[in-house]
Image 1 (cartoon, rainbow, N blue to C red):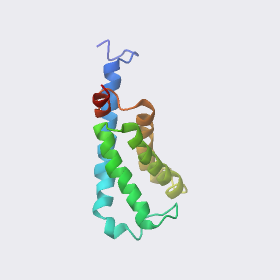
Image 2: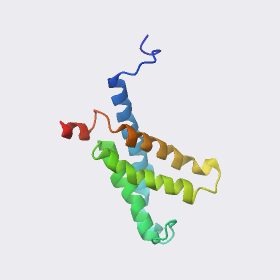
Image 3: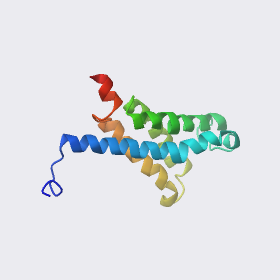
Image 4: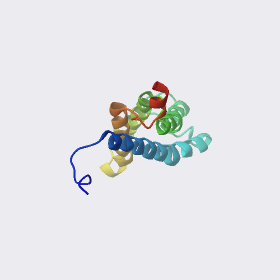
Length: 136
């Protein structure tokens, strides 16, 4: 019971927390956002937001890359920090360029994905990852 109320963080708890963060947010992004964009690519390719003016299909393709491929790598803990960068860029664009003028309620999903992927970028994947297993 004393561990529950302790202010100390053990290495095991930190590594397990990073695993939960990676798998939880990576899987949610992939499943709830990435796969729907991938499945509906042909229907969305002409109307998807293009804030960088690189064409609608390329904007959609980059979002799919970040939300499917990169989120999948983060879940696995493989090339984790590198894979987090496209997700951070995608969520930053969604937050500031697409939803920047909207209410906090409209901005909330981008914020809720941006923050954990920033944590993953700064903290790394933890010991319970393929990056750690390969690095040994």
